[in-house]
Image 1: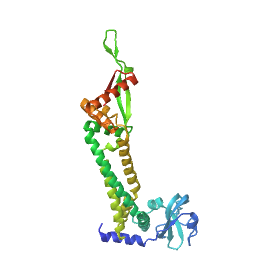
Image 2: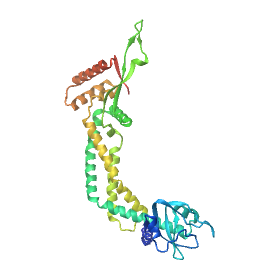
Image 3: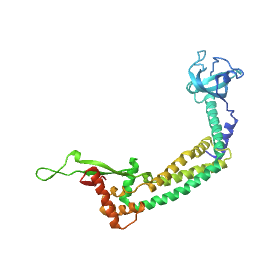
Image 4: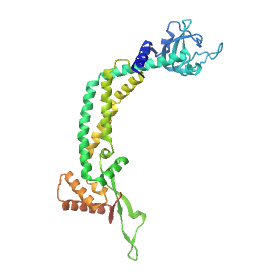
Length: 338
């Protein structure tokens, strides 16, 4: 739609007087109101408002010429003025069902609905703009914090390697963060051969890594895009001249209204990164099968715990941890479950 057409739409909707009746008594107090006052295509003049009530009131549409009233109960509908200057009511859905789309009532209902939506949207935007400065400051703070957090997570990925990072993503998708290995008890039969039954192999939880959600792909990029979208909507709303289409206004209001969700998503992501940075990393070596990767991650875990050392020291630390797990669970062998 062109700017001129948008302006015409806005001008037409501005001419509509929007009034919402919130009680049945308000309708009855309207000058000219009549009980069970038939409404037809022939006697309808124009809309004077809409009603939204906790209780249902009966529709006064005349089903056919000389026929009875609809009397369907509605909580939402319209207050109408007739050609004899009397006032009546019709249900929203009944107005759509009993009058064809080209009727004056149908056109009035559509125009009124859009005008009301426009009025409510403009009021919502005005309310949202009251907190514009504080909101933009908060969004900038979150954007900066996310850049810092993302750089740390990128460093983790480099430090851990692809095999470990892929398993961290799997843990994030599972939601628990639990790192599990398989414990096996070895039995010998009467001939000295290894023998197993189902009870000799079971899962052992080595530990729980908190904050693995940060390893889900594109999270930081998506959060930054959301921040830009909300900030852009604030700026767009500030520059509006009142000639925008109602749908454009609604889109801007929805984007600004997304502020709370966006803040929550960003804060959750930042919390997850802090949780991962502060969690015990000792389960990391149990996420990979390759021995060299295990020892590299053992060294990383030791350094993270404040005990940096040589590769041999990290290897000894991991072997000690594995022996302790075997003793605790009474198993002869641990195997990576991944």
